[in-house]
Amino acid sequence: MMLLLKGSIKTTHLSSNPMIQAKRTIRIATLLVCVLSALPLSAAGPASPAPVFAADAAPAENGAAEALPPVTLRIDERFIPTDVPPAIIEGRTLVPARAVFEALGGVVSWDDSGYPVQVVSVSCYDVIVNLTIGAAAALVNGAEAPLDVPAQIVSDRTLIPVRFVSESLGFKVRWDEVGRIVDIYSRDYDIPPVLSTLEGVDVAVSDTGTRVSLTFAGPAPEYLANPNPPEPRRFSVGFPHTDSVAPMSNLTWHREISVLRGVRAEQEGAQANGAGDAQAEAQGGSTLPQDGQTEAQAQAAPQDGQTGVQAQPAPQDTQAEPQDGQPAPQEASTLWFTFDLLEDVAPLLSKSPDGRTVYLDFPKPQVPFDPWADGKLSVVLDPGHGTETIGKRSPDSSILEYAFNRDMAARVKAHLERHGVETQLTVTNDTDMPLQERCEIANAYGADAFVSLHANAYGDGKNWTKQNGWEIYVYKKGSFSEQLANAVHSETIPASGLADRGVKDYNYYVIRNVNMPAVLIEHGFYTNQAEIELLKSPEFRERLAVMDAKGILRFLGVAWTEPATAPTL
Image (cartoon, rainbow, N blue to C red):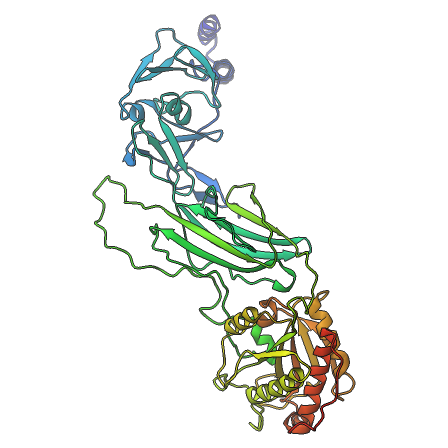
C-alpha cells in the first residue's frame, strides 16, 4: 500500500494538466476507501451486535418511535449511578464492570498484555471470573462456562453480562420488567419478596367448561393451595405478596351452564397497596332505555359505580417517609380466591405464554337439571322496577310499570303455590331493588326457575308508538332457560291474542347472573294505545298470569288444574 501511495504521489509531478491531476486524485481516494474498508473495525475481534441502550427508541405499533424507560441499577435496594448506561444485547443485560462489582466489594482488573486479546477479571470472596472481550465463554475459577452474550467494550467502558457474573460470585439478580430495574443482592442481604399486583379477573363459559383468568401487572406469582382441609364444592387458591387494584373486570357469567356459582377475593395479612377484603361479585342496577330501546334492553347496561369488582381500601397505619437512598417499606400479604361450585370438582391451573395470566379451567357440570333433586319445586318471581324508577309509565300516565309488574307477580305466585310450588318474590315492596340484590336473593333461595316480569316500552316514553306484541328473553339459547321460555311461549301464543315477537336471547343482567333457568317476559307495550287498554284490564292480567303459570308448571313437569273458585280480579 505504501508503494502504491508513493508511486501515486510521484506521478503527480509528471503532468501539470488540471484535468489529469483531478482524475488521478479521484483514483487515489477510491483506492484508499477500498483498502480501509477491508481492515477490521476493532482490534478486539469480530463486530458484536449493536447494544440497545435505555434511552434508545423502540418502534411502536403505529410505526412511530416510542422511548423506552431507562434501565437503572440497584445494589441491595440502593440505586447506583454509572457513567455508561446498561445495554441490552440479544435479550441479555450488560453492565459496567467496575462501577457495579467494586460497589459489591469485588476487585475488577484489566489485562491487555496479550493484545488484541483483552481480559477483564472480577474477583470476590473465593471466586474469580475471567471474561475475554468478544469470547463466547468465560472462566469461573478456571472452569470454562458458556456465555449467551460476550463481554464487550462500549464507549470506552467494559460491559459484562450481569446475571452470569453476579450468580457466579454468589449474588442474586432480579429483573423488574415494569420498572426496567436490575436488582443485585449481596450474599448476606435479606432479599425482599416480589410484590405482585392483580390487574383483572375474567370468567368465560363455553361448551367445554368455565375458565377463570387472573391477570397480573407483571409475571404471575406462584400460587398456593388452600392450607385448610377443602370444603365440599369449594376451591381456594392464594397468591403470596399480592394485592389487587380496582376496578377489575365485570365478573358476570352464564351461571346456569357453569359449575362456578360464586367468587370471593380476600386479602390476608398486611396490605401492600392498601387493598382490603373484596367480594368479587359484579353489581348492577336499573337503567332507563335510550331512544329506540325497549325498556328491558336497558338492563344490559350496569349503573355507574356498579361495573367492576372493587377491592375496598382498608385503614392504613401512618408510616414515616423513607430516607434518601433507602427503599420504601414493603409488607407481604396473600390474595386468596375462593370459588363456590355446583359440584365437588377442582380446576386445572396453568399460565399464559407470557406468564402474566393464571388460568383456572373448571369442567362443565355433570349433574343434569332435576327440579326434584332437593325434594321440592321452587320458583323465584322478579317484579321489575320500582317507584323510584324514572320514566316507567305510559305517555298518559295511566299505567305505572312497577305496579303492573307487582300485580302480575302476585297473580302468578298464587297459581304456582296452589300447585305446591314454593314461590319467592325478589321484591315485596315498591322499591327498585338493585339487579345484583335480586340475583343474590334468587341464588340464595336455590330455586328451580327464575322469571322476571315486565311490560314493554319503546322510544322516550312520552309519545305513543306502533311497536306491539309479547316476547320472552333468555340469556343463551340451547339451554334449560330456552326450554322454560318455549313452555311459557306455547301457553301464551296465540291464546293471548298478542302479536308474537318470539323467544329471544339477550345479555340482560338478571337472567345472566342467576344459577337456575331464567327468563324475562315482556307482556305487551304500554306505549301502544291499543295494548295499554289490555294491560290495564284486570281480566286480561289474570289471563296473562294463568298463561305464565301454565308455562312454568309445564317446564317443571306439573299438570295444570283449574282453581276451585274464580280468582279475585
